[in-house]
Length: 613
Image (tube, rainbow, N blue to C red; front, side, top):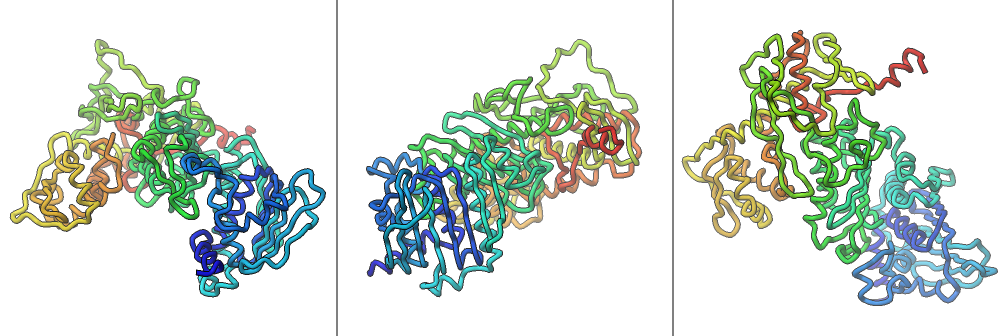
């Protein structure tokens, strides 16, 4: 093959669209020690992409080498591939980009009187020599894919391509808040992100002040990694996962493992179809991650992916279980703390709430709510009460047994301890906190309590099975079959009887009685798909019911029909029982159908409305 064809093939791997060019050039600027980076784009990047930085620059001797394939100054020996700390290292980006554009690079090192310039078209050098310019490097990429019409016709509209550019630029800016970044679109300034010392300031500039204020900061050390993240409270969600920003050792990535770990941590907190906002900075020893598995370095591979997945999941769950974003707690803009001190991975309980009295009428005692202690790797338990089906709540709540041993209260404030102000419009329960007024949707709150109770009771009383008259053979993919084989205990707990049948199928002999009449093959396929996706270590059994969407919907419907309705006038004792019941379940901010359980109206909002501030 000719050199031109080799370069164009390489460009096909590295340069997917104009955003890929911006990514590669800005990463090179960061590696060059730039403190200020300016990006200019015209016509969505098809007409022009220009990146200017004030980095160390390249000398007249180095500059021609930068346009040679696989020429890089960032690696000196093969062992360096196992501990890569720079953004770029392949030495393919510049020659690949130059091969499919009109290309100009001008660079000047500090101390030199003039710079050096190279101009090329479709990879062929047209001119090189001295040229005036500031210290640093400026690269211009004009008429992208002009020499490859088949690639150019696949570019989207300028607005779409600009959206991809800003997305990657935002990711690169997030990881380096100490760098001044600005971008210009069609000769008009589009964004300016000044250098700052606090990552939250950069996040606020890129997302919004409201989004940044809703983020909880998590900072935890694990054996396999260090997790520093800013994650949204469950009340603030998006309709898609585009607000998830993931970084490994300072490198923006689109990694399926990390994305899944973050979403999995919210599985019981968010309704289906909603996604959190998250900015996760993961630091791992360079020797335990391979960043050389994708031509554009978008993906990484970990030596111990399960440990990484578990660390992110547990760090996020610890922060979520604190419930510190809702009333009587410090504002979400602070670092997650406990007792005024930062929380580490060993110090925060995995479930939310302070427990109510075991003799509380209208509640029945079930076995423990499970929480995962990342220090011991074991599940810990706390007594749990849920509304007993068919039980009326009496007018008065029984006092706690004076002889009962004093319970050790976790650091999270209790709904039951809040002063109850009463009922509004026979629909909302009002409670007072140090931070403001909490408004609780009585139907959504009661529905969530019943839903959690149904899930737990279904498992704890023993799942009834419905045997099939004729066992059904279900064909599965190799990965689904492996997931079934590795999850025998969980499958049995959920009420299935499944055994491997040959190389590519299983035999289903029984399904949960509650799902009798449902197609067994569809249930097994859904279960296998869910088992492929989840990390089953440390999963609570109740949470595992979400692996069966049909069963989850059944429990949600039963809870909704049994819960106190919107508009029911409740006696004070029943109001208190519902509020206290929120302490007996793992905290979730919505009912199973996605309606908020409680909202906080801060004192500041009230003072503003009454012109007190």
